[in-house]
Image (cartoon, rainbow, N blue to C red; front, top):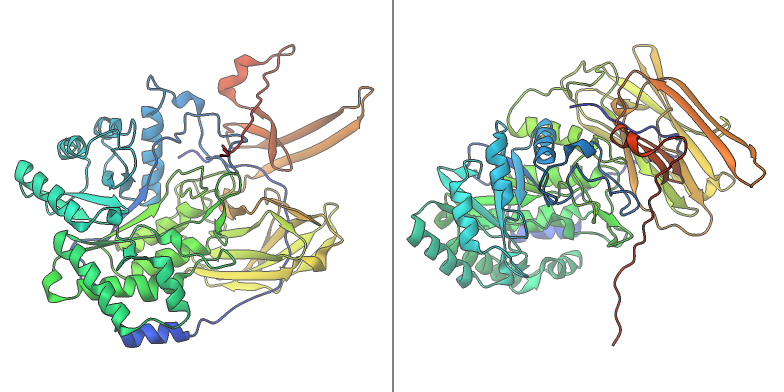
Length: 569
């Protein structure tokens, strides 16, 4: 994969905040109510998928100004005759997904225009790549379930376990279990016993899991509650081929952090307990993980990514259950900013973590990304790029072992002003180099109120040798009153573009009130596109495929307007 990275200026500030996680009262309560058991996996391995919407492809060039992030590896040359689904883009996305170690994409074939993916997957025949079919239980469904079943059966790329076609669902319990019993009976009568169906069940015993979470947090779960939940889940496990929960993004605390304790100690614990009962031997367990869920222009701030912590916590919880399938929503949902795929502000951070997890799941040796400079630690630095004074400035440092030379090292974070003056220096943080490890530094932002912009600098020391990383790290914007941008920037050190020259100048005011801004940098890496930013808003962009559109006399301008629909009665 071509390495394409974005150049940022940057800096950050903080103080070490490490926390222990002793068992809370509600965790102890669950241990007494539902003794923890192991899940005996049916599949030869845990299959790892990411749900793809299949509509945000890499041939599109209209991501700017529409959402708070945009995908990397966008290429206008990946266009195709189909205006909705570009085949060259799909092939490229498959190649990127395989670098993650994913087994493939989960997708909704019943939604408009999606069935062509069966054809695309058959044409590309990417080795080891498969499709996990997800049925929908509600809403408008342009393609019938029967039509999708026929297409999926005919597709060699559809996931099969023990020669049986696997279907999951999305919110299956919108409809009663009897509905799915009738559907499955019809398919088996028509096509034979060649189906596995996993229902996504999220309303346990008639109540949402977030309702149960309130009782869990208040230590009010009773033996009668557990009995009712298990009875409900048994109905689904008896009628189908196991239990599945795809809504890991649902559990957010009041501060928008992830409630991994409830996911692991309540949801996963109870599902494992039911499937461990003798009558359910051979039934499958499906779980999910999540990156985050934040986009103020559409959904607001529901679940913070906390750097990479939400992804790490949810993956660790899911993997601890030894499930048959893990599905991560979503690969490419720009609208909700849940994207697992590489983006401008996430870089390849998720790729590096998922490669680690996939190697663990497949019992494979860890390996760096082929284009990496393995002499640089596989360290990811993450922080909110914009804060209002009074918020805590948190900077997360995560070392991801990848089989490269695992030398221990220390990392010291410095925060500087735009003109290079030191503002803050953290204690040296130690990393073993061969263990997944995270350190989070925290500082009250009001102690930095005299500074509007902070630029992070990271000093790495190993065996007496020091390396400094600052060019390419995003700056931190501290605001006194308002902010709508809660996006974390996540930057692996190996993503930073090595430059031999960086110049940036703002000229004097011209007679018409304008100023000329000149930027010049040199790198040995090929660039797909260059963007000029004003407080992260793209005000000018250049890419080779659009070179013919501009010359000394003509410029191309793009205007966009976005508004949420509203109505009144």
